[in-house]
Image (tube, rainbow, N blue to C red; front, side, top):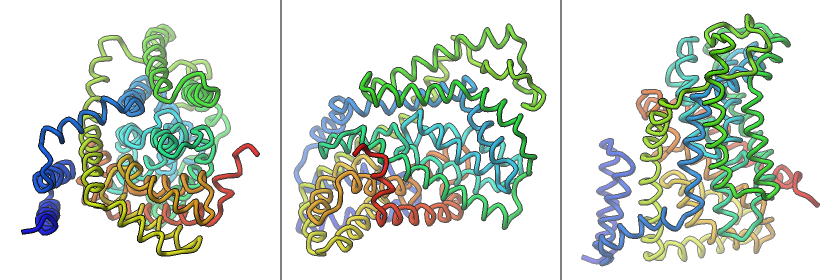
Length: 451
């Protein structure tokens, strides 16, 4: 049989395995190994290429560091303070806790720079609260998964850095361009929360209290400081995004270790409702002890252990697709469309389809060098197209069959993957609407850029 026939049979075989519930990591791995044999690529070469993904990818070092940052921020109590602030602002609305979860994802994204860390942290923290508040557990888990999509759009963002490096664009401008689309994504998902929760009458309404909002804002000051520290350091060039991840890890450890004895010395009790706490008691977070750090690191390693192999095998998959001529075929097809909008929407469709089966990093590595020059040739601004491309890639995080955030949310909440799909679909449509709006209105991405 010809190589094409073998590759078709291998692809059909792994598709069947997926339908049987085989993990996506194994699906991609089986496809990579099978195609390697067909193309006479040694497994030694495949293994070395997977190793090189991390050995030569300095930017990828930010991934485990930002994930660790998320766990440190969560354990120290800062993430809880951010979610309390979001709930104080939104709890008086129907579905306020669900909207607060989305809002907390937006705030946390500005610290972690990672979709998976955002999903894991907010999901593990607010999912139990939402279930206790009368929300459907499937909706709660899907909310965490959807909220995590802004993790790579609201700056800082690991994938914006990779895109900027690939396409020789200024990362600072990419970060600025991602702010308004990221906020629109948050608002769109909040709208879904409000509609779904109003229809199902989920959630317990609270009174709008300026005092509570002020207290929770004071309580969240360390979170706001961490966000400002990351953005200030990157925008001023004081440190790279990967170094920023290291700085936030150090910040999280120092704050956690100092806050714990201070909290005990002040006699603060985190179980006391916010309304009954003094303004002074809100300044210091709960913190953690030195012996707790290993368990925090182990939890971060578990999440990294899910993501790192997925990224590695996906990058090797990209190399095999290149050998098969997929890049030339895609480029020729898009170019044949001709015209501004036909090329733009064809490119968006390509990104959406690729995001359904691949992680955002290999999607960017495979597709961006092909599609960006074609888009530029018909007059699409490079920064604008970068935002369009990466918003589309972020939507892939909740799009089956890959849907990385769906897997992360399933892992931290215990809700089976396929049970999330009913409510994640609603978020998916709202994000698609924002994506089209950003594509049609370039100023949404470009208005904050310096003239």
